[in-house]
Length: 201
Image (cartoon, rainbow, N blue to C red):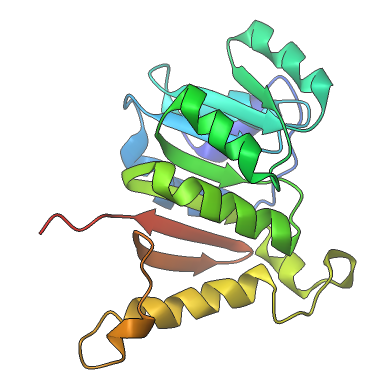
């Protein structure tokens, strides 16, 4: 089944750009019917949680995070819902103590530079190998209402990480190499996806 069909069949509305669906199919195709944990920040009325559940299958553990207490009502549909501030490292520390390591994190939360950076830094060591961190709406790194343009935009942080990944080459300055377990960074229209992989040698 196509993800966009799951989107339209969800019992509740979810705001997703139509350009995202092919991207998500490319990124998540290998996770269908697997025993995985997916966490989405920015639950709203829960429409996307139903979409992920239908697309990925019943083996997938779906967890939503939001700062709106009303989202807890979605637990009656067998989703796990955590209420908290994605810009608070303490929230993330407690979250991962309770939940454990996860496979996929989708950040569709507040979209500010600080929120996105704290979320990434708090989550990266709690993503399983070959897992993903996916950040939606990267275009907010260009919008004035999100404090941009800024040298501290999340887009610029990602560009900096690209440079640091390439510095892992011994022919460059290895001292500037990215130490985080990020193997690749893929850019799409308004989406950036980070693949997590730790060295085993």
